[in-house]
Image 1: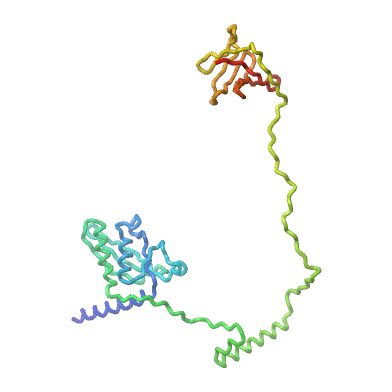
Image 2 (image 1 turned 30 degrees about the horizontal axis):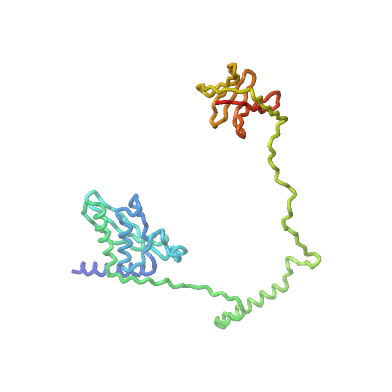
Length: 300
């Protein structure tokens, strides 16, 4: 009987201590992925833990959705950590609450489940662990600001102190004033209206002009017009056409290119290209460093 009574008082004392600790914290931070698992919200454990904490009167938030005051003061909340001690035949969980210094301030009882399906097993074990918060009348109480420093900025502030302290403050201020009067200044300012000047940094228009790309000019260009009788007839080949005169004699070979109406051209003595320009066929080639454009009468 004595053992039972001792255990009861021990449990009551532990619960009172734990509640006092938790009353100091405003938030319960629930990770969206516990360290015990590989995936986010695996087996819906994060969702369940947040839901159960909220149902027991705590303000539970996800670790990626922190309120503004918690972002700037991480010590306002404790982090819920799911400890997984599962074995082959049973699922065992404990929920530890850690403060901003990674110190465990509260641990739940171990929840155990014999369910074979993972989701059902973790659901049952976590719910059993959360029974540790049953009957805990949680109420957030902000920590009192203790040992605040007293700062005296002006002479009138000494009225807030007792007479013995006030006299010491006045004596210290008087001594400091005497030292400041005797002390020579380290820097003597001799600026006058005449010696003051400033540099005008207004942007000045640059006389540098952007260079313009000039198109290369041909040394010379010669345009040849065809005679009306110089008709060439196009005969299809595997790679293009051959142009023959009325003899008939092959005067030029045209090879197809990747562009329509543009051919690589070759005669007995010239290499160039044949293309359409303004409805006319033009044979363009170089002759003695001179660019020649020779119009052709071609009948396809």
